[in-house]
Image 1 (tube, rainbow, N blue to C red):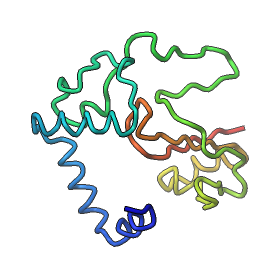
Image 2 (image 1 turned 180 degrees about the vertical axis):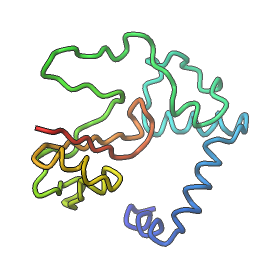
Image 3 (image 1 turned 90 degrees about the vertical axis):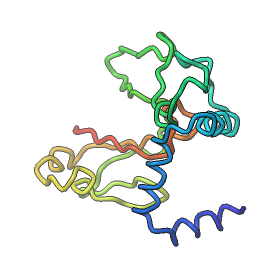
Image 4 (image 1 turned 135 degrees about the horizontal axis):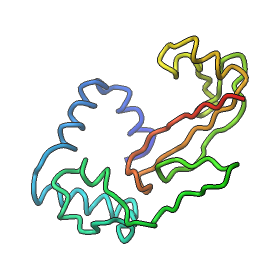
Length: 156
């Protein structure tokens, strides 16, 4: 199936219903079916299970449990240098830059309002008015096994 078709289908789907359905499936304890899905996911996205505290796909009762699996001690040592920001998930910085007039570019050239990203808290957004942002992209291959964007705002 082409990517354009997949994306087009997503626009046609009722998003809240789809979100609830996927949430229920990810929380389902479906035994061998859950294990099969996890094994498929590991193969499909080349997930490095040797870094997991428990590398056995069959040991995760739900996909959610697999999704939040713990890593072995020392697998991701934190950098404690003063000028380094560490975050608790494997990710790539997909966008970074200044917050200009309360707006920032988050994804694919789209701008977003910092106040909106901060839950509508205008006072909090003001603290970041002349700051910077970074958008972290977590892909299925990353330790936190999801595809999403997380934006961090930094005050100057």
